[in-house]
Every structure is written in C-alpha cells, then in structure tokens.
Amino acid sequence: MATFEGRFDDSTSFRIAVVVARFNDLVTGKLLSGCLDCLSRHGVDISSASDQLDVAWVPGSFELPIVAQTLAKSGRYQVVITLGAVIRGDTPHFDVVVSESSKGIASVSRETAVPIIFGVLTTDTLQQALERAGVKSNLGWNYALQALEMASLMRVLHSSDSTN
Image 1: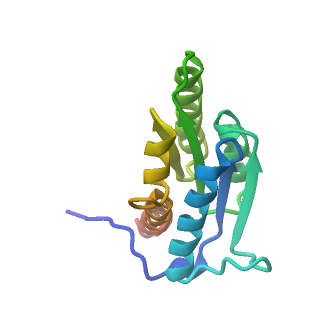
Image 2 (image 1 turned 30 degrees about the vertical axis):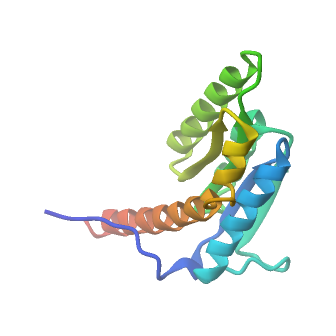
Image 3 (image 1 turned 120 degrees about the vertical axis):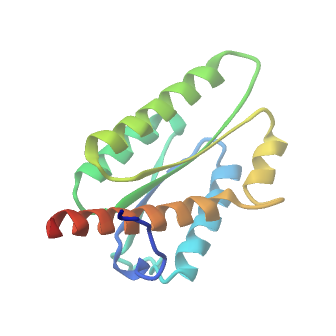
C-alpha cells in the first residue's frame, strides 16, 4: 500500500498564482493579506520582484474561473488560489454567482490537472464575511496552506508516476 501526502518543506520551488475578486474588496483584501502572510512564512517570495508569485485582480467572483483557467493553462503555475466573497442580498443573484463560480473553478481544476483552491466565502452577512477574513480567523491563511499542500502532493504523485 502506498500513501501519498503533501508536505510543507518544499514551498520555495513552487510558482503560485492568486486570483482575487475586487467586488467586496474590504473582505477579499483581508483574505489576500492572510494568504500572503502564510505563503511568506512558508518560504515563498512574495516581494514585488518575485518570480514565484503572481496576483491577478478580477471584477468579481463570477470572473474567477476564466482567469484561473488562463493561468492554469499557461503551464507556469503548480497551483492557483482563487479568493472572493459573495454575500447574500435580497435577490437570487447570490445563488447564481455562487453556483457558477464554484462550478467553474472545479471545472478548471479537473480540465487542467492544476489544483485550483476555492477560496470564495459565501456568507449571509458582511459581518460573517469579515469574521472569516480576519476578525476571528483569516481563511486566506488556510487557502494558502491548502495550496502548498496540493502543489506538493501533485509533485509527489507525478514523481510516483515516473518511477512506475
């Protein structure tokens, strides 16, 4: 029996893209800060001169999948993190955006075989979103950790394929 796991000790060799929705940027900016903090603490160069990390801004969560797909297909990245915040309002718009962004992001990951981290908060209120983006804990940190683990796991799986 083989067991495959991602590790967190080889983060300096990964190229990572982060796609951030500008809509609800009070929340997504905090998610991005948490994400970058985690990546930095795990050895990823997050400086503006870095060739290890790129950040792309999109208008809203609905646009996350197409940019994630473009980045994943480029072959430059081992993992793509998507960050967004969809907050329920008085219309069914919430349901459409959540459904299409989640289906789109999952589809990109399957089509490209590049891990795409789903970092889109879906909350009923702005307060709930802010709590998840830093007031109580910052899920941006968790999304970055998931990205590092998945990039590492995919590397392990690919190296396992080449030895068989």
